[in-house]
Amino acid sequence: MIEEIKKELFKNKDEKYQKFSSSLLPNIENVLGVRFPILKKIAKKIAKNDYELFFRENDDEFLELTLLEAMVLGLIDKDFNYIKNHLKFFIKKIHCWSVCDTLCSNLKIVKEHKNETKEFIEKYFNSKNEYEIRFCYVILLNYFIESDFDYVIEKIEFFNNELYYAKMAAAWCLSYCFMYDFNKTLKVIKNKKIHPWVLKKGILKARESFRLSKEQKEILKIISL
Image (tube, rainbow, N blue to C red; front, side, top):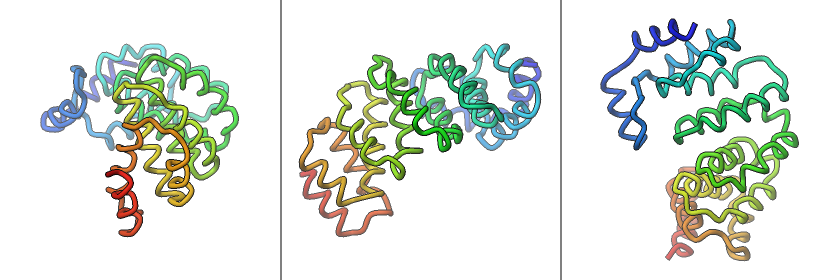
């Protein structure tokens, strides 16, 4: 099965897109250059067939194979325990922001299993692995800001790490908090201690958003000075 999938990936690789993708993923050298709409179509086919065989055979020779596994995991009709058990294995394979964020955005099952997800990700907040930490914060910004805002803020306050892609995810998460509840987030950053880099970058990303008013952006500009 895996060889057939590789043939399909090779058939759809795009040299220009490969160069573009590689430029965004430092130190990742196994990018074929298959565009996401095509990957999604392939993932849907795998999810409708023997996806367990794909999971077993996947050797992650190319970045796109790892991305496919992340997509398929979000597409298959299995219960949360199945997904959780596979995540324990898959999270160890996350080696770049693209795989991490693709996985998180596809895990729609989290919407129906918030408490179980919180319990599952808790240990990863304390990880020393950059992408395990990033996984937690991207899950938060995708699924928890509207439903459990205080929990998200608590985890942003908890953040204390210097790993770049982990810091970026925490800052991204903070920027979403500003977009969801500007006044409450503003109060939090005034009264609580947040990692300085995360605070600065989170404010910058919030100011870049079209979801904040001109007045709100001015307030953040003053705070960031």
